[in-house]
Image: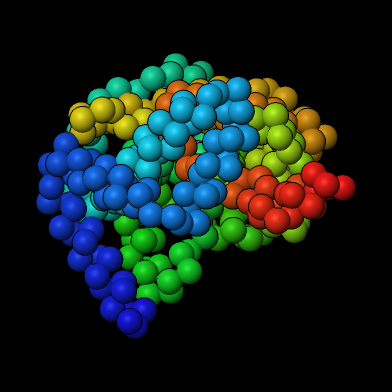
Length: 306
């Protein structure tokens, strides 16, 4: 099937989902997730490894139940995109039923040095950009999807309520600093592997994770306030609860290891709000100081033998 055909089918599915009331939309997503988890897949393997790392103190039964809950949430992540990207702005905003921690934002803006919003892949993270950019000017680092034909649609959907998306290069970093100097919002995803450059190993759920240092460097250079924001799905399609949580102030430290450790520690607090809603199918611990990939069973076995 051609790339154009795949993109067309995907957009058609999103348009269908956008017409569904949120309770039905989420029920459809949960059903798709439960069907998906029945079959062996790369995602199922990665999720199980991640849960075994993050929640090693739990029983196997508890982790299996969490895995099943995660796949229901993963399905909702797909179907709710239709609502988030295609519904009327007033309808989307009406789905946000509560803002928990608004005082943190008020206090941060009062300092006049901008607010860096760290947005992990949790719950309905695609709601966060539209919501906050509707409240005040917001600049967000953006990496286009691999499907080039889909990129214009995604960018337009994410910018439709006022956000400014900037590339993940030096020009984008400068744009973030400029926004902070104007006492505006700067959005960054803090929980992706930064690649060969721009990262340090810092504990995340007590295991080293290759962690970005950009957020810490920007915080140190701008002296901006740093907050985490997550969008929690409420049960039975009732809507969403937006959370603002303070980031450990050590994120401003000049030492990248101290800064990254502080950021990961605060990220853990976000995950614990609703563990099943974090994106556990991402290989967060793929890079390790000892070179052993925990997702590769053969390599893991060799490491134990050595």
